[in-house]
Length: 325
Length: 234
Image 1 (cartoon, each protein chain N blue to C red):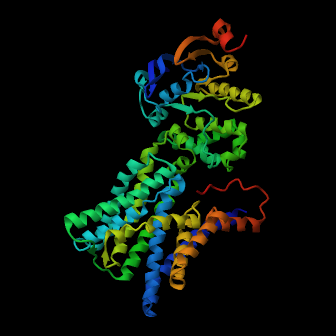
Image 2: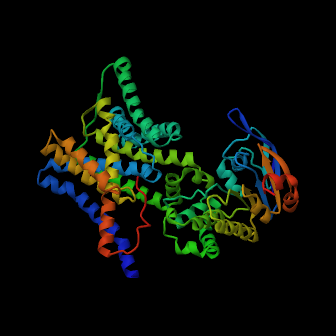
Image 3: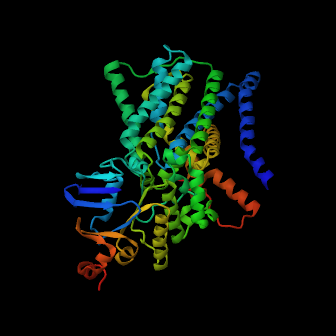
């Protein structure tokens, strides 16, 4: 039994490293077979994986459903628009992350006193607020809508995204293992009790919210370089708020693997549906989502877990399973 | 050990506590009894830093804790068990206990503390992987107590320990308080269950409409006409 348990511990890291090696090698093969599309597709997948996993970093354990992802991603995009010509690429990407971090401290400081649906609505409106204030500023003061973005080769973008994702996975893992990870779940489980125990609830929430936004900003800053032109309606598109949330639900939020699987499968599915059924794709998509929420409340990971349990023939009631929002 | 002086607390314009003063000495079990709405929980919340007092002071071991944030109060050595235990229902028993040792000074010693809690409540060890919401009422009470102990408090404050428990479990819960005292923890409890609290407490205060109306040793209060009439129905 002991050997089996040990061997189980290594399965996920080994798979993760294998996938990482394959991804690092990917541009080489894609260039040889001259399929630019592959790299573009993987860029999108990596971007959504980063958004989903960083969303789950905060919203997963605490149960606070943030719909401000588009705001942080958009701030990253705009940072690239403003600073892309002035700063070298790594510094510019970092600035995108920091700008989002600061914005999240402000938004979080105001909204994290709210709960449940109020928090979701407020974060959602923050996206609209920023979008329209920026639009107003560009039209009336700066004069001229949108701005061009400096272009960077797709392969470079791909590697930067991959680097951000690895950093994000490591951060998520370390946070989950630390006592702060435990404290975040305790906030989700019973916030009053967390405060009674001595968790500095507000600080912890705001900091984690900002940390998750940092990664969204990084992703935005590097993704902008593939877009040539951005304006506030492209940058602060609400779909960037909805998709990561849906992807996390789709994959399951109990651990780190869930949001990743959710984002990868979901992005690929979306890509296929858009190309194959351009007119009804949203309809099919919505149906899949509804079915997921009704029949797979714990997402794909929950499904895998229950199949595994059935195969192993567990006799006991499931009392160790985690709540997933 | 704990000293509350002339505490006044308002919710908006309504005054809840009027010049409340009390004292809890080291190693004592002190009870605060009173009817629904007398302001018992408000008093505990004010001591725990969850409600800011308008005036008055809270001192603990010579340190002024008036208006201090909850984490500072826990750090000072006061553990507060709110009504109904307030567990983390979606976390395992082990995680619940670990959360009790959240503060920096306790976190380092969580292993030893965990052993101690498991010694006192072997039942919790058996169930350490189970989610707290799947425990029975009595086990929840043990878990709440265990979590309190994980912070290694000098003073434990218990709000309505008997809340929602069967008479047998109420007795067990009160026995646990005795056990805490034997382990060197001072106990301050708040109860509607006047008879049983007076039986285990050394001293008690009676709170009515936000004012302390009576205080004294438990046996004195048991004999007082007011308590006998109003609370014991004798």
